[in-house]
Image (cartoon, rainbow, N blue to C red; front, side, top):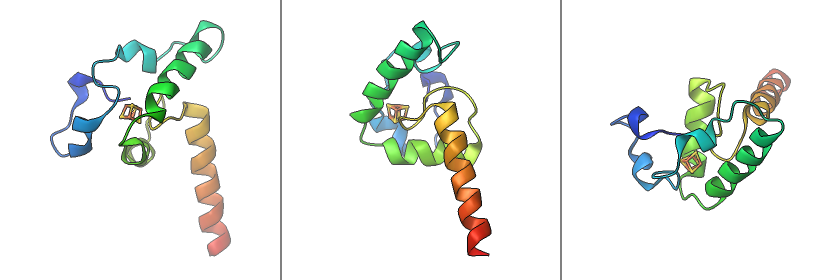
Amino acid sequence: MITQNAILPAVSWLRRAACRGEDPELFFPISAKGPGHLQHERAKAVCRRCPVRRPCLDYALSTGQEHGIWGGTDPDERRASARREQDRRVSAG
Ligand code: SF4
């Protein structure tokens, strides 16, 4: 999730982010369990209607974002995606 304070001039897609104006804490719950799980799901619902979901996820993966919801994914999902990509590269030689 991109907070208003973290806007990078070179990342032009941020202007179209569906999370602009949302409470940043929604995208950075303390835990993925209990009430935090509900926050994850609410944040992901915002991401599902976001027109820049793909570049957001690419940014998170390329910069190793370890916390928060980015591109509709939580940290566990991004780690799994990174592992799959690494496995794919190893298999491809
Ligand atoms: S995909 Fe989600 S976190 Fe990323 S810019 Fe869109 S609403 Fe924000």
